[in-house]
Image (cartoon, rainbow, N blue to C red):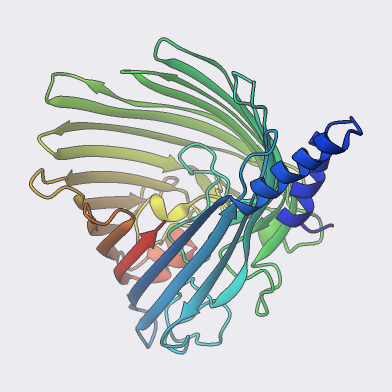
Length: 441
């Protein structure tokens, strides 16, 4: 399969299509001048993120201590007759070496996993077209990009990790209706490869970093100011033949919808809500025959800087071959920061969440969060464990783009958790601690 074309291939080709057919030298010269300006006077963007991560896992001999730095540098050209391009490189560097944690690429198997492998690679490279006179703002894009489907429960860039997840392919989005506080977005994406959070040239597992596929994702998003939004989606995920069953049996067809929003109860009190349901079945290269569902509900109240929320979600499962899967999701954002449930347990998962966050008005930019989870096996109702998550993050108001944070996760599992879960939660106890800072421009 061909590689994703680079910015330097896409932009000149698209730009050439936009040149006028007229052979007048002056017009051609003006167009070349505009093209040079579009390429030369674009926007530079960058990210620098340092993170220290400590992991203490009860069933491993050593603690992991990872000190890593992510540097990303991007360049977006100016629009030329609606055509533009974006190119971004990223590097992940282990400042104290990778001898103090298992990265997924080294042999430090007595250490817990910290999925930040040192690497330098092209992260994104795409060309796009937005018709300058199109009131619908229809956008056509092709290349390597970070892709988000809804709230990232099914497709996301996994931005918490230092090496983000990207996809190769293309898509189109359009907003055909936008008036009176209402809007409609329609989108479709075709994906022929996913570049996961491990290096593309993975040595220990050649199928770990880059996976070929024939995947289709469609979505519609309806928003109404003051009420919320309805997101309807479909994901038809089909890994290429030839991979191990552990890969191809994640091929699936998922159809679902999510209704969420914030409604003003009074001038000082708001009510937050969310309801979601998705149905999944085997598809494409998956040799299993199954059907499973995901459903979620949440309700919260926000007042005086505090937000209290209760959440409930279920990933159905009956066995290793009959369970709801989300292999392209930003899993870290769901069901605990300890990352014990990035893969669905064989007996499914039922999670209760109690969350309290506070944004103190006297210190703009500071967010304090406490999350408490109770995890059960969906199929057997056995208690799997509990988790406490803490976060303090400060976006420096006097220095836009700069933030600092400290984060903690403590998973306390039952003795039989490994048998119930059948995934990474085999550890009865696991704690993670992060200290990080980031600057984005």
